[in-house]
Image (cartoon, rainbow over all chains, first blue to last red; front, side):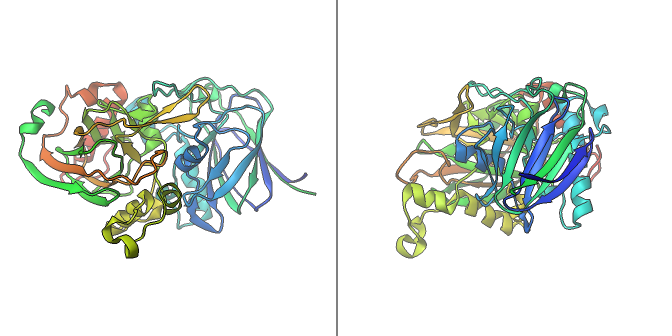
Amino acid sequence: MNIVRSSTIRAGAPFLARIEKGQRCRIVDTEGNEAVDAFFFNADDPLERYSAVDTIRAQRNVYLTKGSVLLSTENRPMLTIVEDTVGRHDTLGGACASESNTVRYAHDRKFMHNCRDNFLHALLAWSDGLTKRDIGANVNFFMNVPVTQAGGLSFEDGISGPGEYVELRAEMNVLVLISNCPQLNNPCSGFDPTPVEFVVMEED
Amino acid sequence: MNESATAEPVVLEDRLPPGCHHALVVRRGYTLRLTDLQGGANVGLLAFNFDDRTDRYNMADTLKAQHTAMLKAGNILMSDMGRALLSITRDDCGWHDAICGTTDAAMVAAQYGERDFQDARNDYYRNGRDGFLIELGRWGLSRRDLVPNVNFFSKVVTGGDGALTFIEAHSAAGDCVDLRAELNCLVVFNSAPHPLSPATTYPTGEVAFSVRWTGPGGPDDACRTSCPENGRAFENSEAWFAQPEGGPVR
């Protein structure tokens, strides 16, 4: 594998990158216990996008890990998780937003920085045509959201340590939209968001 | 109040044949009742703020705010703008799936075989995705608005390793779920089978639906008070109506 390029995504920052079919991207939790909110579009037709529920339904499992195939809203493979040192990633918890922060914590949290603002910022900078309507349920890499047999769901302290990573192979040309989660109201980033590394690789 | 809902006049009543799709506007304070007439039904459902259809049901926001991976009485369906859309004021099943999505044409063909209109006329096998898209298109929406849906009357359990198990025959004949609108809601639904149903024959049961006036949830409402998060979502919905024509306030 050759490294094509590498980017540091600062804590709380938006990020958007196009990766070509066959390329891989490795997301490194540099300092550990960070939540990386990620969403994916077909780079050639952004109305086709990542589908959390189709991914869950097809693999009959709520957690993402090595071997998971991230499916699109057209039920086509977008990316495959080919390496994963953590073992479990979430795709039910969604992205924090100004509005959901008012619901989950308090009305006065609405001006805190949040992942939806990052998603919108990066998306609208890339294309005028895309809006909130185009953002569906995302992946939360390194985030620990256990689901119980009784149907409970909670956000727990992260299980990812410094230097742990997840690596995905693109099965189509994809646009990767990332918010390095700025959430300070729950333990998804240990109340201390930190930078992550985004590395694009390809075969020799 | 909820308890007297059945005594309130019904303003709309109809039946959805198996696999079919529909959409209707349920205004704030009206309650949509879905009834599984035969048992074992699945109703895939999406909801939008009718006054601003970019404001729509959001699976993740709904689940994390209520610390649940499924929906039952006392839960609300929240929009991505932090508003209560629909409150589950009555629920005879105790569990409604929110994380498995819907079927598409290929899935239905693989599970039940091919049966198109030319061969079967209106008994052809419809699927959830196409049903959603047709109704979204009817109301000016598109596949951009096809987001993770609720599957009423269906139960899927998550094991310790995250594996999903579909529970068969979860809903009994006559089971109801009442959805009270806290905003003016566009409700889009279909009775296509659940995507994880192991059944080998296509569903045959009808789903009755009706709308009656019950009034919106008051200060002591069970859905509003079931957790502080729901209370704030109700406040966000009420803020929408703080201006006479409605509109973003909070």
